[in-house]
Length: 150
Figure 1 (cartoon, rainbow, N blue to C red):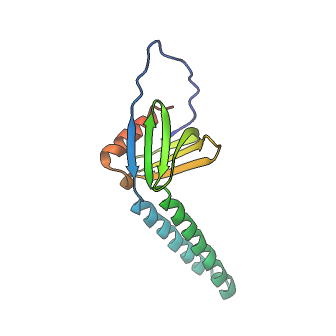
Figure 2 (figure 1 turned 90 degrees about the vertical axis):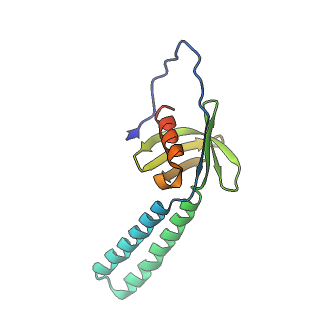
Figure 3 (figure 1 turned 30 degrees about the vertical axis):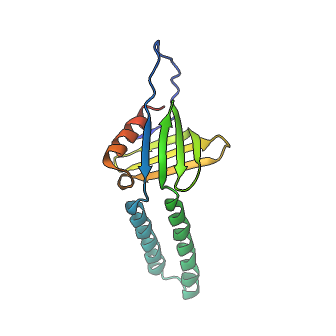
């Protein structure tokens, strides 16, 4: 399910409680396997296209550079996602905590979450979390919190 930005600004007649959430996200083996499978398919496609050897061997480093870059990005998806007083925070492993607000769409699938946001300095934040990156209870609580946070 993809949820667009909520346009409903109606305020309830009572004070709402703010749930506190803290989820530790590890690196996802599933996303790494999917990345390597995509790289294998890209190399296979280059092979099956019967490119001249010079083009084939010239394109292979591009595939490997892309895989290395994406693997580094997947490594940055490990950290702690938390909420306090209706505010969302992300802390990368070994980094500082960044408050962010949601921007754009939010992807909520059974096995995948994609959170788009911006921090207070305006830097873009994109979190791609697979189900195997979080504990099962944290996964369920995070999906509920994200579903009702907008």
